[in-house]
Length: 120
Image (spheres, rainbow, N blue to C red):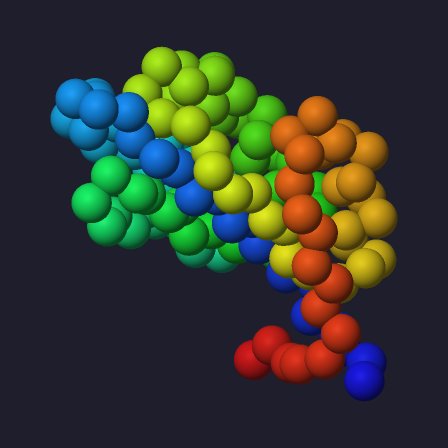
């Protein structure tokens, strides 16, 4: 089934290191502040479950995601002091994922191809 939804979502799950939750929460606030002005960002936020944290984020297209990663690159590097990325998935139409496979290969994500659906 065809979809014309070009939205790309990145799905990182972090495991916060012992005793580092306060620092990681502060970093999450900085991520939100840094991301808020991005015109290609559709939604962005952090969900918490014990020492596991999920960043819920979506972008209009692959370019929006790449722009975001460039924008928050220094914060992402800093995050490794407080947490480890346990899972990293990228979801989207193949036309958009094709633009991300090479630039993101160093992050070792799992790519999920959107095959059917719609966007209102």
